[in-house]
Image (cartoon, rainbow, N blue to C red; front, side, top):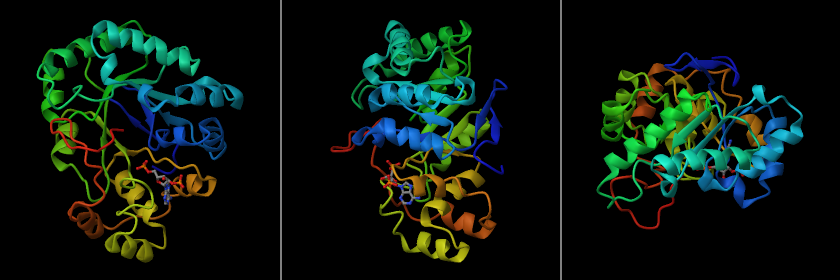
Amino acid sequence: MDSIYDCYTLNNGMQIPCVGFGTYKAMDTDSVEVTKCAIEAGYRYFDTASLYGTEEDLGKAIKESGIPREEFFIVSKLWTDEMGYEGAKAAYERSLKRLQLGYLDLYLIHWPRPSAEYADWKKLDVETWKALEDLYKEKKVRGIGLSNFLPHHIDNILEHCTVKPLVDQLELHPGYAQETALAYLKEHDIQPQAWSPLGRGGRSELMQNPFIMELAGKYEVSPAQICLRFLLQRGIIPLPKSGNPERMRQNQDIFSFEITREDMYRLETMPQTGWLGEHPDFKIPDKKVQ
Ligand code: A2P
C-alpha cells in the first residue's frame, strides 16, 4: 500500500480503500464543515451510521463537493433498534435518504445484540442479515458486512448465510489487538476494519503511552502515525477521525516509514491500553458504543 487510495480486495472481488475517515465525533461540531475539510484533505472513504447522526451532513458535504458519487466509498450501519428483517430494510432506505444517495458501498449491522441481556440475539442477527442479503442480491447495496461482531456472533451468521460478510469493524489499536478475532477473520476471509484506531480519543492514554511515544521518537513520526501504521502493516483498515485539517493530513502520511518486525511484535503484545470498555456480551456501565 502506497497511499490511502490503494485498495484491498474483498471476498466478493470488490475493492476497498486501505484508509477511511470516521464521522462519529463529528456530530459534536459542525460536521458538514468537518467533512468538507476531510474531502479537501483527500479522504474519499467515509464511515457513518444511523446512530452517529452524521449521515445528513455527510450527504450534504458530498453533494456540495461536486465530486462524482462513484469516487466516494460510503459505509453506513443500522442500529440495534433497527434490527430484524423489515426493520433493516426500512433502515437502509432511511440512511440512503439522509445521505441523498442512490446506493451505499457497504452496509453493516452495527452491533450483534441489542443488549448484553438480550437472549434471542442469534435469531435476530440472522433475520437482520437476511435483509442485508436481499438488499445485496437486489443490487441496492454494493456490499454487506458486520461491526463489533466477535467470532461466535459471526459463526451464527455463517451457519445461516448465503452471502458471506465482507468486513467486520472492531475496536482495534495497539493495546487492544483482539488477536482471536483477527485470526478468525483471516481464516474466513473477512476484512478487518478499526474504529478508534488511536485508542479512545486522540489525546488518550494510548497517545501518551511511554512505549508509543518512544516509537514515535524512533521513527520520527507522531504517536498517531505509529498506531495507524501498525494497523496498516497488519492489513487492517483504520478509520481515524479528526476535526483538525493538519491532523487529517497527518493521518494519511503513514506510507513513508515501516515499523520493524521486532517493534510490531512489541506493539502486538503490549499491555491493554486505551480500550473503550465496550463488549457486546458483557454489561459495562457508562461506556459508549461506536
Ligand atoms: P482532533 O479532532 O482534535 O484532531 P476516536 O477515534 O476515539 O473518537 O478519537 C478521535 C480523536 O482523535 C479526536 O478527538 C481527534 O482530535 C484525535 N486525533 C485524530 N488524529 C489525531 C492525531 N494525528 N494526533 C492526535 N490526536 C488525533
